[in-house]
Image (cartoon, rainbow, N blue to C red; front, side):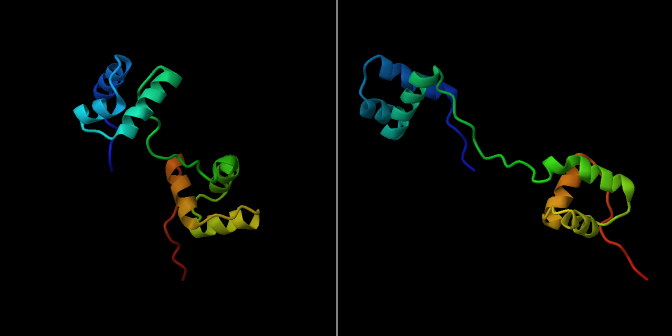
Length: 119
């Protein structure tokens, strides 16, 4: 995955623009796109910083609003499998995948059985 360009480069680009050089001249010197020069300059005018915006996304955990419910279910029956826990949540109207349950349990530090052998 690509990374944001350095702060040093960003600051030098904006400094040259503020000194009066054209966007295309600055872009040519630093071998970047003219649109990049324009965006960095605009960001500097709006925020006072040329730092990159947040990089990458963040997706909130779907079970976070039901955290206490999940903890209570695990405490009530700690040897329940992820599939059983998913079924119990579905019975309460909380429909999520087994993977969502597994990831949430792992993030919360809760242990669980991977599968349940039946005789």
